[in-house]
Amino acid sequence: MRDDDYGIGNSEVRNFGFHLTKAENEFFKEDLYKPGSIIRIKRKFSKKNGEEWQILQDGELSLTLKESRFTISEKNFLHTAAGMQFLINCFKSGMYSVSKIKDALKEKLKEQL
View 1 (cartoon, rainbow, N blue to C red):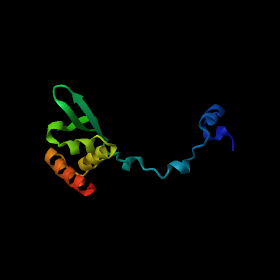
View 2 (cartoon, rainbow, N blue to C red):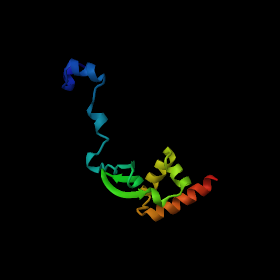
View 3 (cartoon, rainbow, N blue to C red):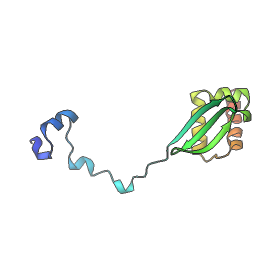
């Protein structure tokens, strides 16, 4: 089969290195696709307010965790990659308040000891 049969020129085939056929695209149902929300954690530091962690959902600020609410061991844990992952998992599981996240963080640190 020639490249012209697919409706693309030779230069396009060389750039991509593969051919798309109708059979490869039939399995994806675009109307059923619902992308999940994107959750990010930003750690900010200012001289006035100290350190804080901001939880952003789809680019909008959802929750702010202030440094003054946490102990030194809790802050040290939140500085690690595991701490950031912990915050994301807490937010995904429905913990939208600082007190619930703090309680879960205390239990997490007790498990690690």
